[in-house]
Amino acid sequence: MKKIVVLSGAGISAESGISTFRDSNGLWENHRIEDVATPEGWEANPELVLEFYNQRRKQLFEVEPNEGHKALVKLEDFYDVQIVTQNVDDLHERAGSSNILHLHGELKKVRSTIDYNLVYDLSHWELKSGDKCEKGSQLRPHIVWFGEAVPSIVLAEEHVRKADVLIIVGTSLNVYPAAGLVDVIKEGTKVYIVDPADVPTNGVENITVIKAGAGEGLAELVNELTSSK
Image (cartoon, rainbow, N blue to C red; front, top):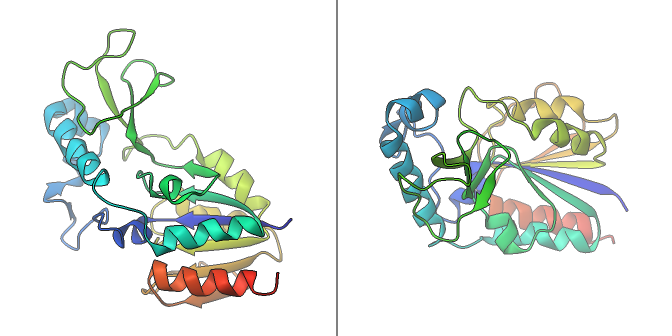
């Protein structure tokens, strides 16, 4: 069975109503990125960071997977499908995709501030100051902030190297190390980019561009990839 790897970004979640990471003015929900998405921001004002992610998490409980997420699930009837997502939401999971690797963490999980390996599911939207891990340290969002390592990137590269088809959807390929994943594809891998905006192809060959939103573009692509099966 051929292997499809899907690299998804904020654009696919935007169609479910989740704000994209960065507005044109450089702000994220009216906050400076440095204040809410860096270790330094956490050190300076943990209450602000907790509240920021509480609001993101609260919104996540109010939205649903869209047609783009659902289209990718259909591929599993015909291919070995691996999702590699830059998104911290759980919309791929809720749509029904089986294999999902989160590069930048997960909004519905929290972790210890003294032991990276202590990660917990959060069944509600609010994480408060004073909520502690079993070792007694404050819990923080299980998010990879700017300036932090991306532990899952090595596994993501392993998946991409084995891909017969790489689908890139909803990402500008401007954020590293995720953007560098296209550089490790094997010779002959077919690459599809689904995005209404221009996405840099970084010299990669064998690319088909579908200039459409995630829902429309993925429905078209999935139909093409499964019609001959």
